[in-house]
Image (tube, rainbow, N blue to C red; front, side, top):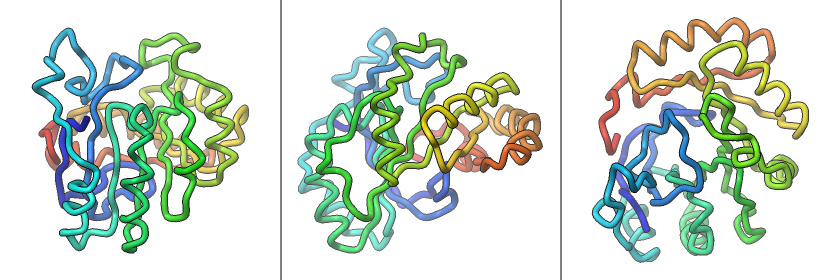
Length: 225
């Protein structure tokens, strides 16, 4: 089930920020973060998910992606690994055609070994206490250990303040996270930049990377961008 697919646009977050990309957004999520900017993928209290999603054949998504010259395909959600039995079939023909794929995941669902293929990267975004969720729901040690050890993951965290950075540091050390990106929370330019300015010097001092939310700065909270 997908919520939408769109592009070409720009990857707005993480190591590929600013690069042309196609997006495939899968429906459903196993978490419910208070600041989530895609509640239409999971929040049944506010949305009719039957109207917000549709079944699309994997072969149709492959054809759609290959019709564009864009080489980066981002699979996001929701939580994509809830539907991972379909992702290998999506990834294989795209990677064979010279495309790259990034899967955005919250780090609570272990990837199938079949997904650990060359050319595919996991952008893992473990949720902090600022998500409003208890630690036992948002931090799954075995999953984070697997993703960290696989060598195909970068870790990006939504942060608001210095306490969030301390929490990130504990997780980075505990799970041997080699690539850490901090992303300021917000769905408006003012909020994103405000948090970024607050956190930037501390992020630099810790040796991490800072990722703005480029799509928010360019298009606000507009869906499909």
